[in-house]
Length: 272
Image (cartoon, rainbow, N blue to C red; front, top):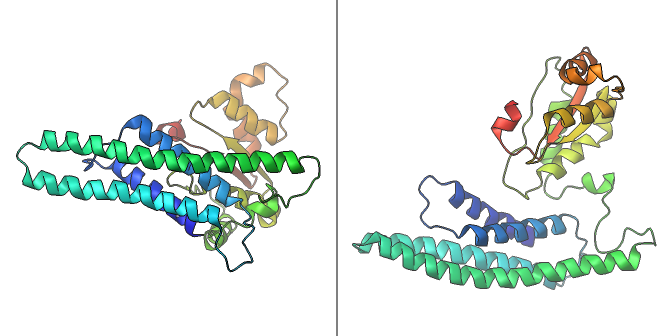
């Protein structure tokens, strides 16, 4: 899907600049955060979008608008990178050049953000309308694919990666292994993990599987309780609540288990 690919490309450009040790241009933090949130929203929408033009030779106008707006935003950013590099090489006062470039970048990028935000609002309206029209009908054919296991098993562009992940999870090794799924926000990490987590092969292979969402405001105790609850452990004894780690360790001993920890924000949180 060209529109989805354009969104991924735009997000990659933004993240590359944000994480670069010496970025060629500087973003306005509030502005770029707004753009990132819109991109993530549209990516998640397209992951489940069933285009009415799916079996038509005609292109979907909504997908074209998303693609064009994403490409325009990417072009604005990349053009200012080139201009800044060229001006810096020719100028004697780099500070002035950077200030002028940032002002122009902000203005041009703001115009693009306003355009892509209009698309986001239109998409949100479509989603609300479909929910109202079909909320009591039980139909999945509402322009958005169902959030069922079937959707998760139909990961667009992830078939080969999903098969590789399933193979690694069920390769028969007896030692514990850790498989990280990493990348920028919105590229489908959770979708990929769910595709494996809910697969029949995984359910048959492991004694039990649990899913824990860590999030930015994580709480180790609550996470352990959540995992133990999914594993069917009774925590009614107050004394035992103080030894959650030990309880979980004993429960996992000599069992084949899969624990997915989703939405991990930092290495420090992982180490805790």
